[in-house]
Amino acid sequence: MSSSKSFSNISSWKLAIATGALRIVTVVLLSVSFTVLNNHVLGTPYYRISDPGKILQFRGTAGYQYMVATIFVGLGYSAVQIVLSIYLLIRKNKDANKLFLFQFYGDKVISYLLISGAIGGYITANDKRDFFDKSYDQIDSALNYSNTSASLLLLGFVCSAISSVLSSYTLPKRSSSTDY
Image 1: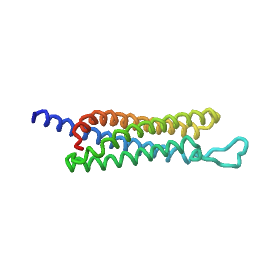
Image 2: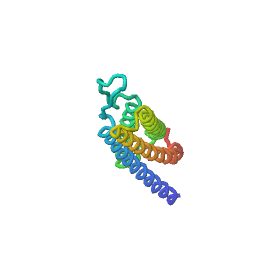
Image 3: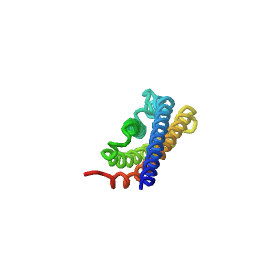
């Protein structure tokens, strides 16, 4: 009985470390995604054909605003989860039962938000590409960077989805050991 309990502890430690590493990778990917989007896309000026005197920027586009919002929500959630993971590792999982549902459902919600933000970025870039002539090199470059940022956001979704799967593996173990 003691060997199965120690195996369970080793397994839960490995899952906790893997989940923490995935969250760190998610934070890095989302940070780089925002940096690329902010530095190369959002400030790019363009002109409307009907009003060439008015300068617009991609910053005012709803799709990019949604993409930025999902990046910040994902960053915030992942940062909170990293802090909670470190806290639980220090406390040796004594308070883990109190937070497992938050982690499980939060991972699901954040995964869906990140994938919707990435899709929003791809759709916005394709709409802008159709809107502009192919002769604008600066616009084409900005839209390529937009797709790069959306791809990084998509990779952040993959890390978050894997973390979600890992948290679902630990869910039955933790809920069966919950003391009421």
